[in-house]
Length: 201
Image: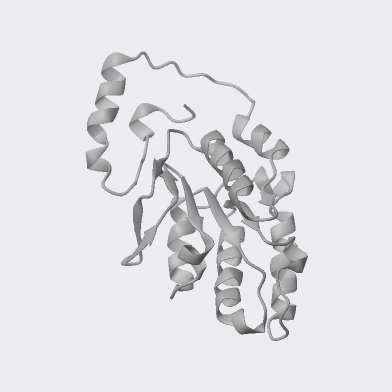
């Protein structure tokens, strides 16, 4: 693991339920601290596709593999997560890593504060099924713009599947200029320089 037993699921929801497992780990294993200069998570991300097209079962399979590589422990599937008093259904959840369907994270009423709390809790966010936005989807596109801005500002790694490349996602008019910046950020978020930054909780 990349995390010492006492730090597993730190600040996680209902961590007290997980603490007996930590005690079992410490009682039945020998913890060896490995010091090294290699960031294996970054090494994996440099060779992984962090923007998958098109969305669908094959992309979901890749996202599942990516989740397993970046999560410090086995993910818990179909968990509920409370953000700003609202329940969000996750595809998979682990310490510092969460996977959402696009509709769950951007399809309903979400505020920038929701995304700020999310970015503070998770260093890696996976999102599956990002659609192409037209003029009729401006509200959803606006939430997606807010999500990307917050993740970018907090140096959160985004791994996603979408129906198009970043610069082809928005086909409306009203948000075209704003979405240009979003597309640029999405491309930058796939770069080694961005991926090597420390998460700003």
